[in-house]
Amino acid sequence: MKIRIIGGGPAGLYFAALMKRENPAHDVVVFERGPRDATWGFGVVFSDRALEFLRADDEAMYQLLMPLMETWPDLTIVHNDTPVPIAGNGFAAIGRLEFLSRLYAHAESLGVKIEFDSEVAALDHPALAGAELIVGADGAFSSVRNEMSEQFGTETDLRTNRFIWYGTSKAFDSLSLTFRETEHGVFCAHHYRYSPAMSTFLVEVTDATWQRAGFADMSEEDTIRRCEQVFANELGGAQILSNKSCWRQFPAVTNRHWSVGNVVLLGDALRTAHFSIGSGTRLAMEDAIALWKALRDSGGLPEALTLFQERRLPPMRKILDAATASIRWYERMDETICLAPLDFAYSYMTRTGRVDHSEMMRRDPKLAAAWEHRHPEIFGDSY
Ligand SMILES: Cc1cc2nc3c(=O)[nH]c(=O)nc-3n(C[C@H](O)[C@H](O)[C@H](O)COP(=O)(O)OP(=O)(O)OC[C@H]3O[C@@H](n4cnc5c(N)ncnc54)[C@H](O)[C@@H]3O)c2cc1C
Image (tube, rainbow, N blue to C red):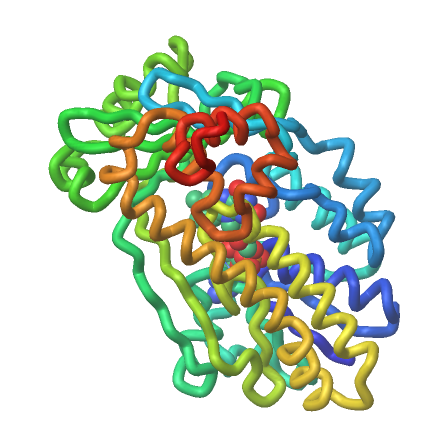
């Protein structure tokens, strides 16, 4: 099959590799507008059981990536200056560039051709001529999707919070979410180590805080200095590092139809899941697995594309519901911060509805018991 893939992120690269592994005779080319050795952002985090989802279908990929991951068993919520460590939350992280470099090498070793510095911004581009399958894996702002947004039934909800993705040379010990009240409102930092010497340091604020803090008119350098000032305790003298970092609003994207004719969407082009649930890269890779399997199990392309959506939608919907609940929790953080540190951390943990009290007891019995003590109105006065 002649397959042309637009976008060399996790979704496009991994799908390309799976198709070549399935049948080396497939003619698979990935077009990536960026150069080989540049990417935005710093590290990405995988929640739950890290890369376990890969094991059943791709043990080799699992073995390739797992040794490169930084892992921790705990999560720490910092409420102003009070840390609340929470056990039983496995996380793993990896530098985005390192991760993509491994995927490039893996795909190329299977015979995938990756054309770097190659922007394909329209479906009538000559590079796509004669393709039997065209994959739009070109990220959250996908031009493939935008060109046919009516046919795909695209909905984009630009959420109000502002975030900026930085890094720092301080290596944090656990995945941490630090919430600090300032005269302008609450600042939240999502920070975690993704290599022995580097951490992601993502700062998020509500729109009102962003306006009050004057970020709209602030220079890049002053923005960094201001964030360093707010999180001076956490950074301990380490600097915040920028990589084309700028304030953004999260676009929550969904599509009613995942394919139109021989064009199918994958990864963030298909739907975005808020970074606070640490699932975007995983979802992108799971999409790739689902599309590969649907093609393998079907007699023809139209049937395969229908099967892809039918099978993939139910598990994806669950994660999207959790992501939506998580976004809303962050949008209300200026109100929730008035809770005591333990209650705040508990509110964070149960924010998506996927973790209830019995799950909290399983993950961190001591913390759950401490919370029960604080709430005799729920648990009676036997405590
Ligand atoms: C601030 C932030 C933090 C995040 N943190 C995490 C995290 O901790 N864990 C996690 O799992 N996920 C995280 N994500 C999400 C994650 O990065 C994405 O979900 C994931 O990369 C999606 O993969 P993708 O392949 O669909 O898209 P992308 O990774 O966006 O890749 C798309 C590729 O397409 C290329 N491209 C775009 N247009 C064209 C074109 N016209 N022609 C050619 N090439 C093109 C782009 O250059 C890019 O390389 C985060 C995202 C953001 C914004």
